[in-house]
Image (cartoon, rainbow, N blue to C red; front, side, top):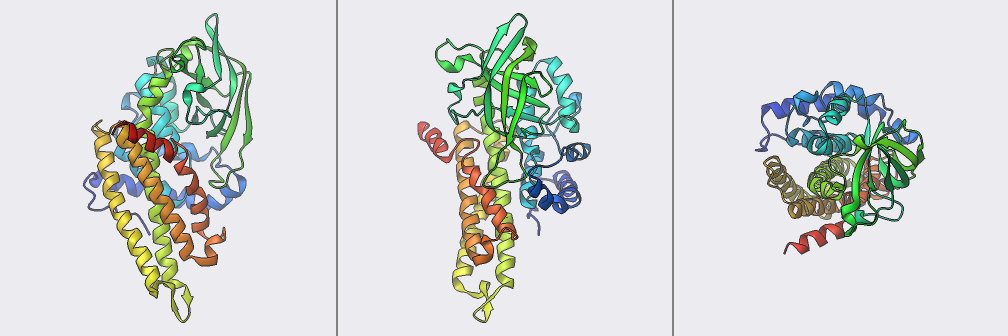
Length: 383
């Protein structure tokens, strides 16, 4: 089984050749190891340089910084294929989120130092926004970065941080000014290396799903970093975060669509094979009607996704449109997962079946990157 990509107008033969490379990598390096990674609760870092070697990391990084200089369509291909395979990689965060901050706001020195290492997989990155007391409300973060001579001294804690256990470089959202109003004007993004004194990783958090994706607590206790580690201008961090959220939300939507398609394809195969009352489960009208409804919605989903990716490549996708894209595709993903699990019957509740893992993993996509409720609020404000 595979995603049907032929005939999609935003892709050409170069994209399809790249897709074949990604599929081959996943078939060799990921699929045989998924169960082991799930049981270990983490993907070993050794896989990152292997992905970097074939161009699966950060394809949008300019050639002058060691990248391929491609557009987001290549990121979308990677995300679709990883989601369809079920591989629990944290590549998406590095390729779609972290490097965009560095490309758009980093100093020349920061770009030359970090981007080649992110592209090659030598360095694994994370971005630390969420705190124990703040979720979507980034203006209310309590982590501080106070100036002491030519250094910042960072104190605070973060939670739910993707790649937290493996990260070598963390983009930390902190308050460099706790007095300014409105509060968002005091937020900055600071580059922190994991080897910094005072930095400590907490637990690899125990989640409902996505067991192999390391999601961690991070602690900063008088962590000293040079002031030159500030990304862009001090106090502009919140603006940068808002500017980059559309791509992050589109990225989540791409993966949601790929994951939903795999659940659907698996379920069609399962229902055609499983017998009940003397015929296959697929032969029941209810099964066919349910699958037909999902098929139609997935067809609409792929067209909508390609429209959004095309607009994003032309820098035309608005924040409200990106919010709608994330909302629609993650809600579709959940509908597909839940109905497909139901069609598996009792088998769907068993972790040995892929649908169970996919169903558990899908639950968070309506939360991270901005909850569905926040997406509706953003869309509503634009009406």
